[in-house]
Image 1: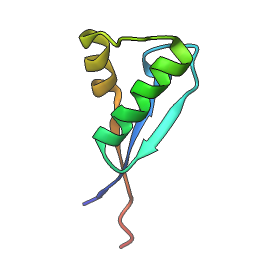
Image 2 (image 1 turned 135 degrees about the vertical axis):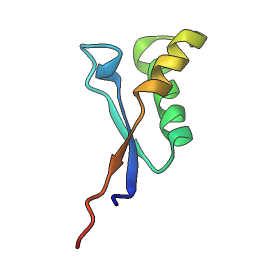
Image 3 (image 1 turned 30 degrees about the horizontal axis):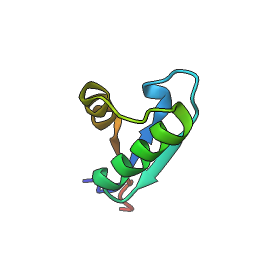
Length: 68
């Protein structure tokens, strides 16, 4: 069975013209990077709860392939 290798957030999943991507060990770390990105690149001084939920839903685990 594959193990989670890392968590991936792609801003393009929310903002179709933004190519920002982040890989992290945990969902929480990906969320921190996504929040910082939203503030610095999209000018969001406050991130609405609805947007936070969309970000959380967009963070996906990437599985490693087992080497059998």
